Image (cartoon, rainbow over all chains, first blue to last red; front, side, top):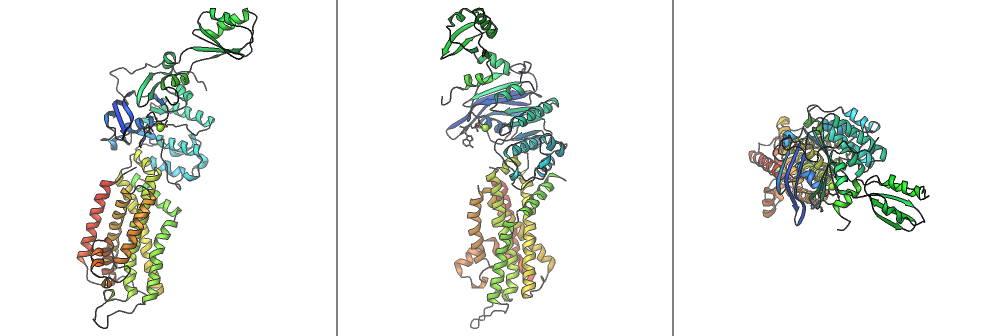
Length: 316
Length: 252
Ligand SMILES: Nc1ncnc2c1ncn2[C@@H]1O[C@H](COP(=O)(O)OP(=O)(O)OP(=O)(O)O)[C@@H](O)[C@H]1O
Ligand SMILES: [Mg+2]
């Protein structure tokens, strides 16, 4: 399974397109603590939009305000053109969600849970098929309390999908999943996208955001500090490419290589920063001087660099 | 199966899988009934000096059997139902249901259905215990007794929904429900006979729903004249608590 960035989607939807989710100037404070300080967001039908940001930056608050589970202090929310507070009944069949914090009764069995939630929809998905997709076939009769953490998480995601919603909100869907289950989950999200479902995904996994999301919104202290496709964000915010290798000799000559901005050394380790096809050019220059380090490798800027650049250092 | 019926069915199954709380709730009225019956026997009591009649003019065991049917109903409404709802709130189950668009009324209806079932089990156990151990008779007006039982069960389900609507945690629900239950039991005619209660206690009793529930079940059960006042009071508690409970209901 590749991890390539999606073919670049526009960084902002066209002004006239109908929106699956429309958020304008959303504000929410818990007493003195401001959780959302004026957030706007558009999600087009069929898109997967990711929300990333540090712990406490307001992601869950944003999602739950959009769902109408928390009442915002100010701002406007529309989901499929409906007001989630006023049109709860009509949205019920159209929206699915997996919340960061929720639970099922201890003795409720996985299969019963899916059948119960399926009964809320006019045309639900087949509970057995969902159990199979999410790797829970063997646990159809297992009580919720006896499922492992990752199995519970998968069941809760399956519950979000059982009504065949048009818009799905997933708040840290893959937290607690093993690497293989995460990949399976990504594939299943690809599947529901292909069926035209719109997805809003909160995640702390940058590989997941890069792999799944058409566009990303970066939150910091309740404000949007970055938005765009993963590719755009990386190009805009991730900074320079780096090349590292080990060498004892003086490599000051590398400063003359086109694109190189800085050459730093910590012990035997050399870090070259710059732009362009840095690795190839640095490699060629080294070979020309008779040096051939075996550990020469590029450190490509990624979403993680974007995240760190936009959301600040810990404690900031 | 529709969502409302499925939710109720799931709640019944969950109850069946965790019967301990229910058994405990129903065991208490049953044990108390057996103890009181042993102590007082079933001879009619008349004060030799004043000629005052106790136990509404019937034998103590005859009196206590329908009273304890009402007490079992009260236990369901004051303890099991609110504790169950509050535990769902505390654990985030209500959050999950709400996020899926389950209307509050659908949840309440499921809880009422479960309460009816548990109360019915309690009534049967108590009536059987009376009949088997002390030979008490069947209700004098069975259909009216059943109707009265249904009314008081709905009343206490509404009381339970109100408590469960506002109390945030299972512990809080227990801390509120248990004392309420014990006080009602002592002053509402399920402990000392109503004739033995003095002024302030009698006044307190008039403000508590169990007083009327005991009458509503006893009147047809014992073949006494229908107490319309008690019926009206029970209905008033039902409507008031249900309305307030739906208004004050909190998902989190
Ligand atoms: N129910 C609440 N009561 C009071 N404060 C809250 C409540 N929920 C969230 N907060 C505060 O609001 C801020 C945003 O919280 P939120 O849960 O939205 O963050 P998040 O981005 O989802 O974090 P995480 O990555 O840890 O899930 C935090 O400072 C948090 O302490
Ligand atoms: Mg969160």
